[in-house]
Length: 267
Image (cartoon, rainbow, N blue to C red; front, top):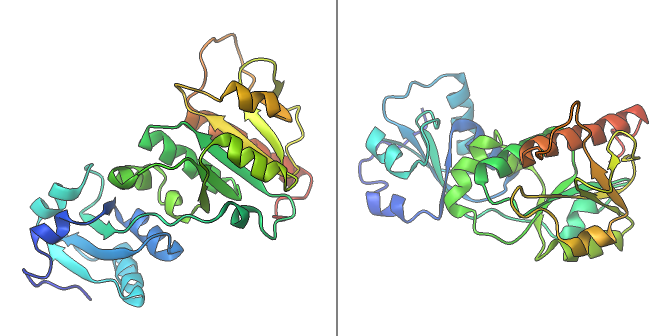
């Protein structure tokens, strides 16, 4: 099966010293595929049978030279943050990020999104999942230590958080200045004084900022925006959509418009 069963190969102290943990085969396989972080070791529950999916993960791990070890359920539980890992976790290094320039390099009409002020790791992962599925070119985040939440983000995103090209900017204003200087229009998702996403032209080069549910987007950024966008509701309702839901709606409207204009493959 390609795994080590040596009791002393990974002691409890060595496991506890791991900088982060990914949980579940999907997240781990995505990290191996993308090279988004170093995978130090994969731990599999001792009695977990090897099905086709696990066999594929083991083959990828062998190809990458990543050691795999069978361990007790107690060891898995000690380091997992949730219950949906399926008996497979990985000890990993920190997420690697690209430069902002890399998100738009060699793209004809790049579309980059920034999730600004999204604090909840599940919401962040869920939103990232939609952005990746919709074909968004890159995601910008603020500096933050997501190490303790890597497992949650990975599971919520179905591995998309490892596959999505990501870069870091100190502030949304910094990112906006960078991308506008490279020809991207600045769009902000707001509730007031905005046009419907179904009426706006979202097919061009675009930098879209979506704020977190608590703080939203700063006034300084809104004042600079080329486009203020809102999602029209089907009935009167005062509350905002959650960040993950709003991100999904906007990302797939961008995809729809680009497909309609025959631009979906012109990245």
